[in-house]
Length: 66
Image 1 (tube, rainbow, N blue to C red):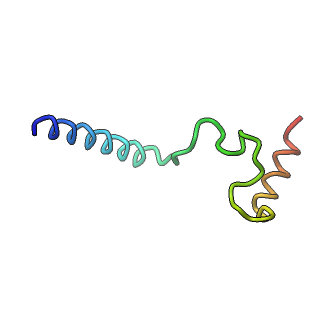
Image 2 (image 1 turned 90 degrees about the vertical axis):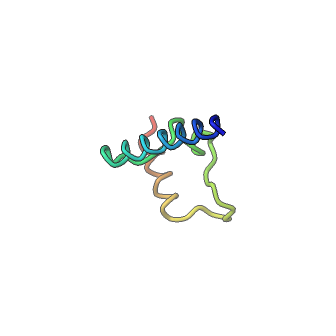
């Protein structure tokens, strides 16, 4: 039972520190490796065509790429 209590307190401390970090910095949690676009995939959903927002982002990325 003591191991459970120690583990619970540890996880509670980690969650509390993450919450305080978010409250003080107000930065969104984001991936570090580029997400699905780093794999060269055009879209994430099962739609036949990407939505207008995704098309605009793709066009902007293609213009920025040398």
